Length: 127
View 1 (cartoon, rainbow, N blue to C red):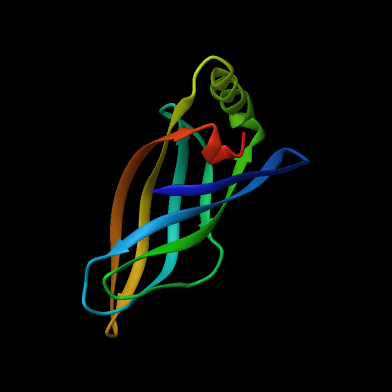
View 2: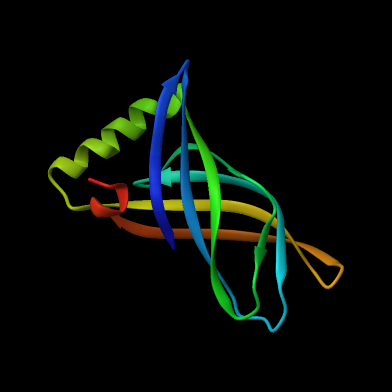
């Protein structure tokens, strides 16, 4: 799941933003998330890239919040604004993330592919 999406100030040709990603670890051991290569989508259109703020630790059999940073580029800004304007007439939008992350557990590392989509509401965006 996605929580606490915050849009930052426009600096140059980019908008730096943050969000929390909820990740469930069903395993009986902790996992470290080390690297993330992903894109963020709004209403099915790519709007930016996502980075892991720092190495994240997922506790065994728990849902953890992983803080992420993402950047909306000037090329995607019009797409983002067009999708965001839909919130005037709608209560929610589809937000998605896709890519891969590197995880390590018990001294074994693995790259995991993911593609998630979720409906976000105005309240998720603080509106």
